[in-house]
Length: 218
Image 1 (cartoon, rainbow, N blue to C red):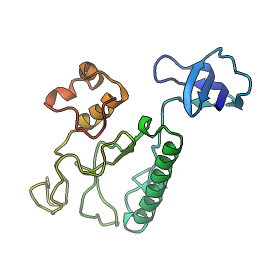
Image 2 (tube, rainbow, N blue to C red; image 1 turned 90 degrees about the horizontal axis):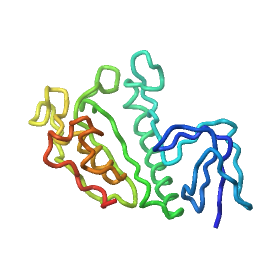
Image 3 (cartoon, rainbow, N blue to C red; image 1 turned 180 degrees about the horizontal axis):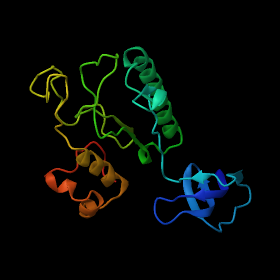
């Protein structure tokens, strides 16, 4: 059995208010957290020096080097033809390495990696070699609890001006709501469906199906 103790951290838990204290991790899992935890003998101590620690959260909000107006390099919408292919290859390798690591730690069924965005991109490039804001998009979900190897929802016809295009530039009309997507993840995370109305501010009430079925039961 291996145990780590992260001390002197600003801890932001999933539930409750933030505090200054310690987080103990045993065999790759969070064992305890609190403001006055005792560090057990033999534990490896990591001094956070006041740094923020978010046990249970994994935030990989990283741009792919595509810039937008007034944002500079961090959000470019103009270099997708030259840079995006390489960067997506790096992303693929990173996600694969992360998923492999969760398997080695025997926590792959407890960790779900997913992409999320409130908008998609046009199918037709703009004049700067990039794409513009659009509607529908695709996402991927990875993890040991994911019922993978398939598409969920309705795959669109990728035709400019086609039946799934809101105009003539490839602005895809969504067939699945982001609220349904989020509710499926929330249910796996332990949110009671009876609480969906308050969690999603009533948006899930617009759909007869809130569980898209891409995750196993929690």
